[in-house]
Every structure is written in structure tokens, then in C-alpha cells.
Length: 431
Ligand code: DLL
Image (tube, rainbow, N blue to C red; front, side):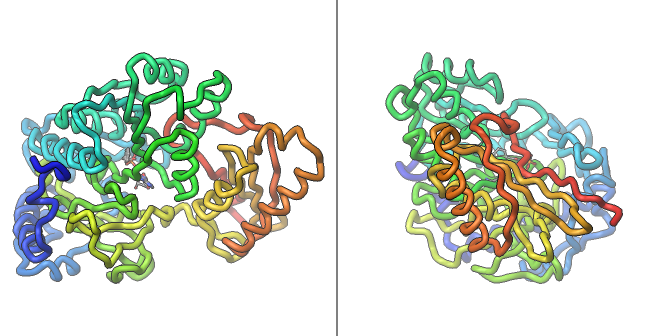
């Protein structure tokens, strides 16, 4: 193993060889997928070049739902060793099946990702993502074991215990949702702990939900560590699909395992580097349940430049939001992430906020509740008014909208231990 790389050969493979490998693996994928009920009549037996992938139809979340529970299974049930499933809170559940080799490949991608950020055997890794059907806990768990770090399978929640574990075992690396990390910091403050000086944390993996660069910088400053963006989705295994390297400027998508496309969400046409659109993935190594041209709903762009870290796998930007979480307020398109970006850049703003959208006189009306720092909240009315004005102006510059701003006390908004609910949509649907 080379110092800087987990798997130098594959991480630094030249683009031409990578594309050849992709075509080879794609054809194997087509062969496997054709054994499933769902794909058997939808895909060609073989394609001769990667461009021909564009002629294969997309797979969507509703295709996964409609083929529940076994319509996309491509091997015999005996080959399956694990499943992960979404809760189905916004619709019917979806399920992903893994063979032994699928778990092995996933484990390797996670170990590769963690190693890339600088995690080594000597690290103590506190995994604060939920263990269970959600992929955040178990996904990182096995990767960390393969790497050889000492893992604390803390799972999410129970903040007091999390803090105790960090202190007792001198955790150096954490895996956490950004919203939970922000919440945890307020608890540190209450307990008089300064994570910068009283703990040994040096690396955090932030993922499972959209977050702005400003939130990440804020967390790096509060905790005194390097935060790396970790992106993935259950349909593509879970975490370990794309991860930031130590340059922290975009996430490498592991293209030996996934074909990455960015498309125009309205027309489905492919977009070029630097153009923002929806991420589409095709699995290249999955046996149990191969998925072809999956529309993730996540919005990002690819970077045209080569990364100085030497890895040749293309990078994507931070996720701007999801196609389905874009708000249209009085005709203006706004992503919650744009709002977060503005808020987290203002030092007087504390670590939590909530966006409410409702119908007033047939029009969309946006109300943003913002927790402000204790001293500001209990300071003069003048200070509060001027903070409100600053937030309004900055939001107007960033998004062109002028929402109502309500400043509230720290710790008064609902807290998150997993994926945060940032937007409450109370709009009348029948007008
Ligand atoms: O959230 C997998 C994961 C776990 C990724 C832990 C990273 C860390 P799902 O529950 O299927 O899987 O949700 C996937 O979450 O399509 C994105 O919309 C969002 N998401 C995940 N990671 C990020 C990220 C896991 N780093 C959905 N930035 C995805 C922004 C993210 N959004």
C-alpha cells in the first residue's frame, strides 16, 4: 500500500484505461441486470461504447418502488446476504439487496475514502450515524474495520453518551450529520467543554444531508478539525460513492464502481463539466441489484480540472439541493441550501434554523426562524433589528426573495440527531 493511496493503481488509473474498464464492467452489469424482472426487457444485451449508455432509459425512485420487493433482484435469493431499505416516509419503501461480494466492494470503497482523508490504523473512529436499515452506520463500520482503525459503533443520538465516549476513548475521527454536529456543539457549550482543547478530534466526515460550505467552515472552527464531505445514497450502496480528498475542493466519485452523468433535470440531456444538473449513476460492480442510469434527484456539477492529489476520478461539487426540494416562492426558484449559506456566514446567527412556507392570500409566503446567539437575543432591541435587516439584505442578494425573518432563542427550534428537517411546507395543495 502506498503512503497516500489505499489502492494507487485504481485511484490514479489513466482516463483511457478507466473508460475501458467502465465499458467492460458496464457490459457485465447489463448481463447481470437482464436477469431481473424489471430490466430484462428494458436494456440491450451489450453496448459497444460508453456513449451508447445514453440510449438506455433512466431508472427512477418510483421504478424502485414499483418493483418492490424483488423486481430488481438479479441473483437468486440465496446469494443475498444483506438488505438496506428506506423508511418510506415520503412514499412506499424501497429496498436494496447485496451479495457477499457487493458488501466486500462497498467496504473497500469506504476504506479507500477514509484512507484518502488521512485516517490510519492508529485512529479512534466514533461512528455517530444510525446503525440499521439506514446505510450511514453499517456502511462506514465495515470500511473502518478493513482500514484497521478502532471503531466505536456509537450510532446516532444519546448526545451525553457520545460526549462521554469521545472523552473516555480519545476519539480522533467522527462521522456525523452536519445538523447533529451543530446541535452537539451547543451541548458542549452547556457542559463547559471546548472541543478544540478538551478533545482529540482531528477529522469529521459530514454527510447524509445537504450542507453549505459555510456550515462546514463553521464546524471546522468550532471543533478544531478538518471536515470532509461524504456523499452517497442507499441505491448506490450508501456512503462511499463520493468523498473529498485532503484538498477539500470537490468530491471524487469512484468511477471504477459508478458511471457518473450530469443531466438537465427537465430534458434529460447530458450536460458538460461545470454545468449544474442532476446526478445520474450506474452501478458497475453490483451483483445483487444492479441499477442503470439512476436519477438521484441531487443537483451538482462536475469539475473539469484534474485534481492535484493525483486521483483521476472526476470530482463533483457540493450538493446544492435536490430537484424535489427546490422552493418556488412567488415565481423565484430557491434552494434551502442558499438560505443556509447566508445564515451560517453571519456570526451572530446560532446553529439552527427552520424554513416555513405557507400560502397567504393564494401566494407563497416564506418565514425563516433563525436561532441567534444568547448574548444577542438578550441584548438590545436595536441590535436584534439590525441583525434582522442584515439577514434580509443578504438573503435578498443571494436569492432575490424577501422572506419574513423571526429571530428566536438558541435551542428553541426542533433538534436533529440524524437528517435534519429544514423545511416545513404548510402550503395549501388544492389552490
Ligand atoms: O444518506 C447515505 C449516506 C450516509 C451518505 C452517510 C453519507 C453519509 P440515503 O438515506 O439513501 O443515503 O439518502 C441519500 O441524502 O440522495 C442526498 O440527497 C443526501 N445526501 C447524502 N450525502 C450527502 C452530502 C445516505 N454529503 C440522499 N451532501 C442523497 C448533500 C447528501 N446531500
